[in-house]
Length: 204
Length: 204
Image (cartoon, rainbow over all chains, first blue to last red; front, side, top):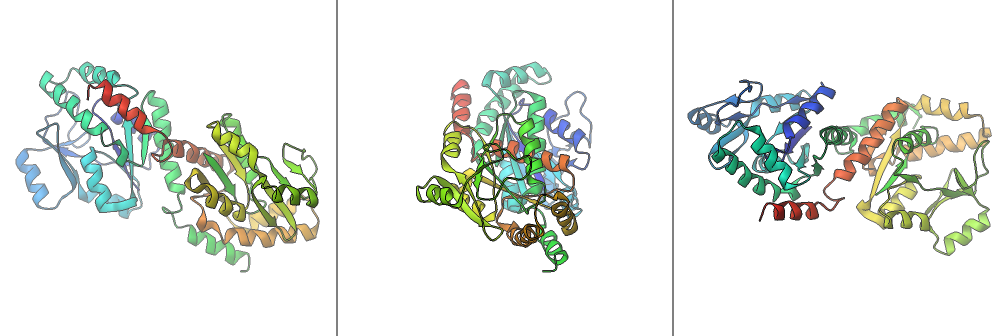
């Protein structure tokens, strides 16, 4: 399963995903590449692959990106295709933290194999406070993120699930519940094999 | 939401539902009526409404049953319509423990408002051992339940979710996850109201 998590900047997607991964060590997060500069504390290959616009363009042309998008006006974000396809081939669940354009691209390419989750704020002010409170970016960058947030919110309806992040713990519980429930979904596991075995054991 | 839980006799549906209700006091279980005699310890109005075949026929003719089915060859089971419709009108989630025929009838009447979950055993022998271990029924009744189990198992594919009850605690966790995830499902809650409020707070 490919779990796509989107939501406006500052909504706490990263923290919620972090909690999920702590509880589900069998899941992995896909590391995106981006042309935006690293924030304080961010590590290459763990938070992002930080690449130049030229490197990004080369990867894109070579078909190495599962999805990519221009975000906040001028920044490029993309998901390397290789690790995602490898994880899915290994039967491992993988999490993508991407924007609505990326989510659309993933849905087009993978259909229902992807589960799309949107994380929404309980109110607009909470989002703005978090973005300003970050203090790691210029006023201009914050203004662009606020504009992007409006765009993200206007695309909520294309997702499979919407979680309101009023409380981190509860939001993480809900995200984990979505993973557990989707694994039990008849369209997502080979129940026919179990059914045949049970009926054959019953002598049918 | 109407949560329908089916599965062969002896699979432990009742126990799994019991655990769910302990953790989710906001959910209620619908009490079925049946023409089968009470087992030791079963209480009228709590486990079932125990009715005569004549009473059952009267309820059915009066349209008082949401669904009803002949099970194990000659026993009648049915879901009183009133309490279910009242709970749904009150926005309360309700659980129905019914067989595949009942699940089909509910799907026909309520469509996707109903969530259908099938509880499967990990192996056939586990089921037969539980049915025989119950020791509350005649050999003839057990034989009929075993025949019904095969019929139930052959209808697994019509459910939305399939849970394997290998471990009661884990099965209850999965059932609870399905409830939590379905509440976050875009088709099941009024996210448009949240979206409009957020966008209006943002000045859009």
